Length: 169
Image (cartoon, rainbow, N blue to C red):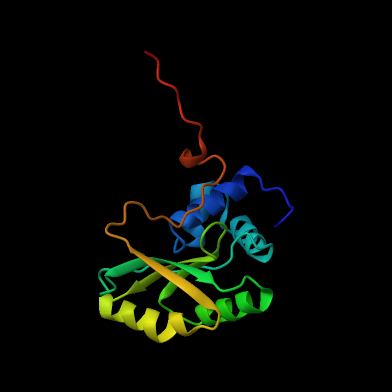
């Protein structure tokens, strides 16, 4: 984790880029009250120091025909380093796996998988996931509706980070 402290302008740059990574440097500079040259220097510094990992375009899965979103819990036969490495390497190579987490609790891994239909999910589980050496148990849960999805992290000073207000009666 970066050890450098960020100032208000840095936080505002990060917040603005989370909202719109396509903002031009001139637009970004205007939004954070800097001239373009110092703004660009700050963005480059934030990139170099690892605060900004990359820039992406978020696509609409439903519009692209990827209508099935599934959370899959996987338990391994043994939680030894070699088994974890094999599983993680195999999962990392699959484009339909959107996220994968090593977990505590009943399951070793939690995956979020997006596919076009139930048949594609069946092929993923039967032809791939169940064949990874060391996989002991697989449990799937279909997402019926996406209630909330965001990619922006809750940064200091944002509305998401403000403490809840108490109501007076």
